[in-house]
Picture 1 (cartoon, rainbow, N blue to C red):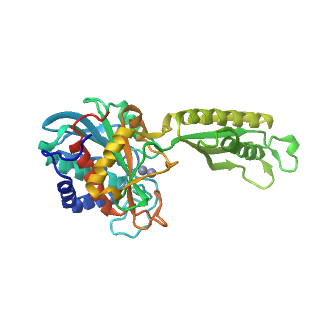
Picture 2: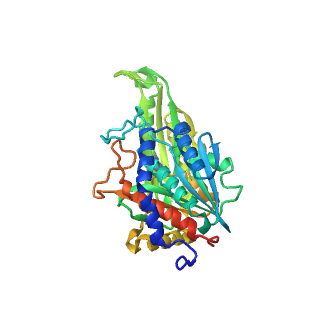
Picture 3: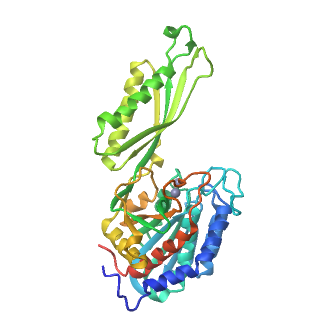
Length: 406
Ligand SMILES: [Zn+2]
Ligand SMILES: [Zn+2]
């Protein structure tokens, strides 16, 4: 895994210089995408911008993968592994409240998770690499994936063959991270983000007069008990040194002061850091809802949306350390920060990492890390300067990975 002294390769300083040379263009691209955000599986204009840009670079382009996804393929002049870099391209249903002059033109839709930056960085890196093909060994796949937010666009891309033809040896992706200072790379071996599953529950009792509860079956009292009991999974069932989060984010029932409603419904999410806990939590949730509800004479309809749930995002230590070594070669040891804990947020890049060894890296974009503006905030404003570190690492990884990392 010698990543320095590639006499026939691009030196780190040259890579950084080329990334800096494309910075203005990356900003222009990012702002164009930011102004025109599109929700998951509706990224038609975004996909067109991406496809046109790649075609102009002479990169082979496939469109309409997983509806609105785009894949670019660049062959190096020498033999080598197939590396895939993935950017997600979807925005969120949020009304932007920043006052930048490139704010969203789409009412109620905003790039509040930085996917506009992921896309711009990967496009700019594709440009640098297409101009340096003679240094490239193997093949680079540029994956522009729709619908990362809750809709599992990554899973669909894989089902449609993004990791084959040619078979991908390693995958890499960034997520901008406001808790880290601008340009700092956040690395972690093993799990870096949690699994995410969601569930919908409807409890059915018997409608009645608020003054005569004994004649009805109260769905609200039942829901309150069920929800409280669910937290005993976290505190009493799962190994305390393991992590699990159960959050009920929506509850709906009733319509008056003095009527016992027939139904109460709620929705929740469950996060874990390993596959066993994920299964265990799912079984416990089901058992507790059914058990408590039936003790209170309620009928239950539970729907687990496991089909759109995301697995735990787990980095391959070998490839991760290889990438960290390249990062520190680019911007010095201090640019690499090893994260001592994972995030309980989730990410559909996990689907790729289930199939192919690779790594997911946080890229610092926080100008004020004491009180960072969080992802999904309506005033989220990542520091664009981090795109230099982003572009540089993609290019350096592509050029320096001349064989599979095993
Ligand atoms: Zn997000
Ligand atoms: Zn995101």
